[in-house]
Length: 97
Image (cartoon, rainbow, N blue to C red):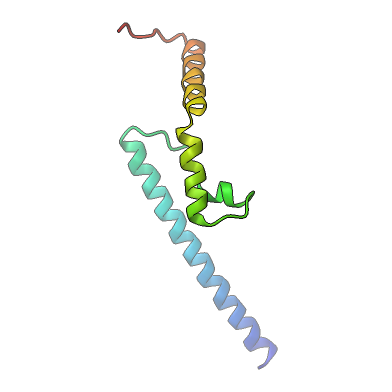
């Protein structure tokens, strides 16, 4: 195989990969826009890749790690404390029960 043919194969492969990445990005943007339209905060989403880049684990194990971490009482309490702090900084009044 000539150098030119090899280069063309590599170029075609890279074009396909770029197309796949663009489609994946489009899908993620669509999903985030949908969730945002329903009132969800989507600027900071956790992904199994956040676990897998640090730990040797399967996708299923990474999902389980995130499930435990996000449902942890201390995590939930910290988020509500942060919401209170941010609301105080914006001088928002707390609703009465």
